[in-house]
Length: 365
Ligand SMILES: Cc1cc2nc3c(=O)[nH]c(=O)nc-3n(C[C@H](O)[C@H](O)[C@H](O)COP(=O)(O)OP(=O)(O)OC[C@H]3O[C@@H](n4cnc5c(N)ncnc54)[C@H](O)[C@@H]3O)c2cc1C
Image (cartoon, rainbow, N blue to C red):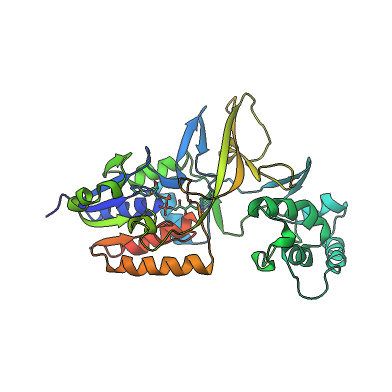
């Protein structure tokens, strides 16, 4: 008999949901987290009374009623609706592209007028689009492309749209109604009190060690747990023996400003090429904050190098093939469950990672 039924490596949402389900079944759980706090990427830091999304803005959205009920059983959600604004050289436009955007851009008011302009502008592209620029123009016309797509996309990829392949943009959703709600999902919001409320609830009753890297003390922790639930990077688990998986990342510059309201919206996209950052997040607006100061984070798209936070898996053939080999190695590890965005090398939204942890937790006897 080992001391714990489960040793959870990492303390993000996958680990939290799995631990919560294990505790419900009377299991003992130790959580080992290498950062100095629990919560993984949804962790919020309290700055001037504002919950700052330290690892990037997180907006919960889902159409899955079961998952929505599950998170609401842990914490109440507010009515935040994501309605980002684009800023092109000081001109502001509502996103996603909808009648408010078109009305501001062309001074028109009906869907017929908007459609006629877009259809006319699309005509400049004849034949199969040869690159991302042609693809985008064939979908939304020249004005929206020039002001709202081009610069933003070039900053994201660090290359000209003419040099990017067309397939990157398959669709650019266009709505011919006045509706600034970014998500199409049935439910969305931000946990009242921030994401840490959910995290604290999920890990209630667990023993927790932070500032500890499991892989540096692997034999010790393996001795402590009957089952290991590993949510760190899968290539790192195997000592990068088959090579390194690649990621894309974002760099944040966060500042406290001595003013109550900086930009009047939580998310503003800077869509010109010259502004070096892609977005500014003003954290207080996720929770309708009324604090005297405000905290903003500028987001810079950055090439990932070792030591940086691995945020987005690169979904190309090379990385998919390498992941598959690691997955096969993982299947041979006895008493280890691999789960979450890093161990499965998969982009998961929060609702999807919760769903996947609940599925994995069905195996808990
Ligand atoms: C910038 C960004 C913005 C996002 N915005 C949204 C959004 O708006 N809406 C949405 O639904 N989803 C969003 N997501 C996705 C969301 O963050 C994930 O679904 C979720 O955080 C995944 O949880 P996880 O437990 O799999 O991983 P993580 O939260 O990454 O947790 C893994 C944990 O394991 C720890 N760890 C790793 N290796 C070790 C080790 N060797 N020893 C000990 N600990 C270790 C890490 O420190 C980390 O804390 C966003 C993701 C990013 C990157």
